[in-house]
Image (cartoon, rainbow, N blue to C red; front, side, top):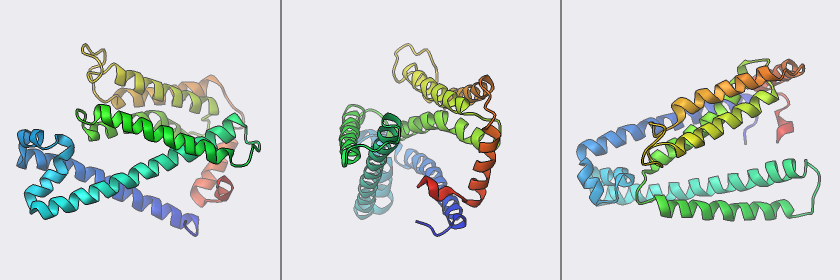
Length: 249
């Protein structure tokens, strides 16, 4: 969607800034709602998930409340649609085609059929989770857990791939596995899932992210790969110039 690598890097920077500002603003909205409305008001009007719309009602009346509610609804639809499409296409193309079939050709239309089935499964699972957890769990807390799991699995691999020339495939697999498994296990051991929690924190990121880095580091040391430095040089050139990136599309 962009003409060259320079424009692509610029768009990434703008996206990072805008997304970062958005998540910073949610903190101010939360404190503002707590200060102006109070917990008792939020309990009577849908709980903490309704903090932003109720704050809009308090500041601008019913018109502003309706506007913010419409914006929130449209945003939710867009995000859900985007995540569903992303999950279905990733599973169908990356896992089904490249892992199960090893990149070989398969029957025409089979990848589309797998994508449709995946979209249905993901949508049904999301609806069931929303029905079970929606009335009692703050959506911001769930987003924080998702970020913690993603950061635990992906951040160590990304950082080492970009800045350590001896990082290997084994290290990447170990970092992904350790970060993902440790974050999920710590969530299940947290106060939100156990009456007598074995892990005191509600969000595992403080522990699981360093464990992901440790797993990636030890995995890279465990098995050396002579071609790792050559791959790092190729990645460095591609990251800084965009040369060869069209082959990944």
